[in-house]
Length: 158
Image 1 (cartoon, rainbow, N blue to C red):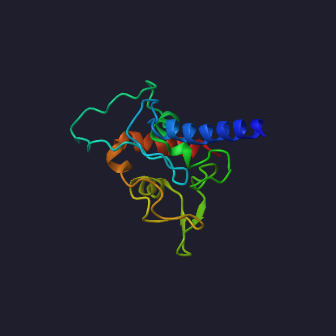
Image 2 (tube, rainbow, N blue to C red):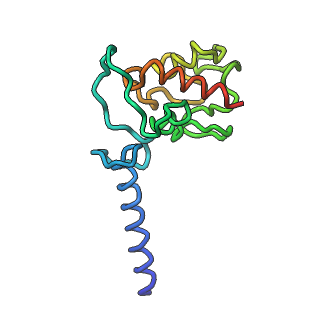
Image 3 (tube, rainbow, N blue to C red):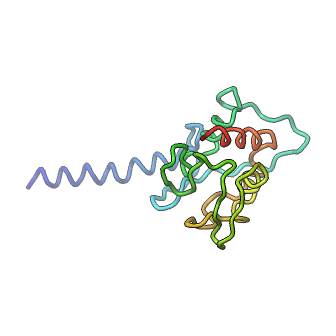
């Protein structure tokens, strides 16, 4: 019986500590003021709006390629690159294919659609997914160059 209570205590500590630590870190591995939540997708600490005349900031990885931008921005927490279903649609094979939207219409996932989905994710929600899940501020958080790099990366995922 004593071992049962020890096991329950260990499980409780893990169930509380792991999500708390994970949710209190931003995607660069630095702690941020985030509230832990097990049912919501990861959220990022808001940044100040970008100055359109400012020089793009260097990335933590030094490259700024689409794959690094996706990882740094939290995209891969919700969008898989291997076809598996996560909170958001997979990016594998997305570029150039027909996508059915929640309203029943279809669109081609061309550059314009991909950019709109990053900048205004609720404009055209994919069938089977909920609106409002994806952060709405990637248009101000990412530079136009970063958005184009992200689109170029998505296009490589066949």
